[in-house]
Image 1 (tube, rainbow, N blue to C red):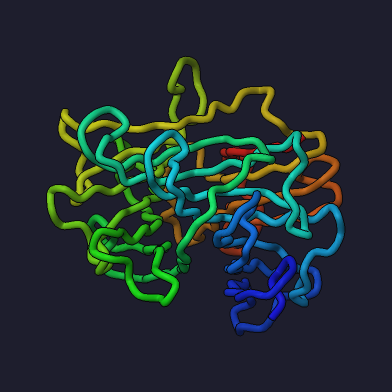
Image 2 (image 1 turned 180 degrees about the vertical axis):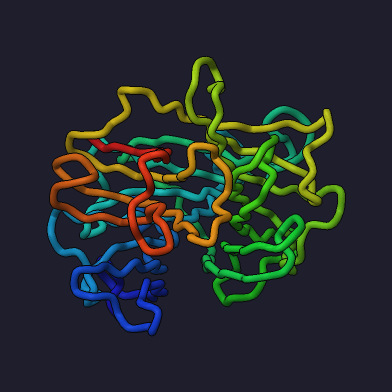
Length: 346
């Protein structure tokens, strides 16, 4: 009856426990995802909020003013981030009490629009990244939705081969599948020997399927993939990191010459934030060669948020940890390196 921040709602918890299933020690943390049906969207207006919160081992909610809640929210709006109608999937950082970040902060939103006009030309899907001010109001919605996260271990990956599929679907308020005109949005992670363009690497995919949840089989189907490539040539010039977003056919092959590739990229320079106060939202990947984890020692890929007055490696604060470690939990060897995308609210 008590949502992670405040008010009533539903909480869907995902926790990390020991091999025997017991709760983590008092020094550990519990990572929980929760869904709140609330009359107040992350910024304003009505909508749904899907949050990720880090609590103590006892499961209590962060109560100090230094706490933050990272929320992923989906808003059905008559006005798409640019123009036209569509869906908006947002990622916002709020305080522990659920209030909006200060006016000096920002809300970073990723949105998917099913539109008759593709980013370049023709029909297709558009996956966008938009940055709005913290005070930006969220469009209200007239109908409810349920956002579901599901993990499927399957012998058939969304495109081909074996792998894991982590799905995110949108259904109606009553839990029924969206209408035939709707879509099921799924995110999946595939460890593959072939990166979206070439070479080995990791591929994080976003796939849009029919309302029945079946994999896209017609030539009109697309798979939107987010991939990280460690390359000696940055998108513009010099060396750096490239975070890519590509659209492939239903079979996972590259689009024909009539297709296109949408890429967002981050270049890490020597002046990358490594100290100072603020928020850091990071995605780290190991291995200097950028190859996928294949050794028996295994790896853990993590998304982490650190609220600290000093560098993320030390100091007090909240840490949402998702780090890349060996199977025994030891730190990576010095021969490796850390690739991070980060957001700092100052």
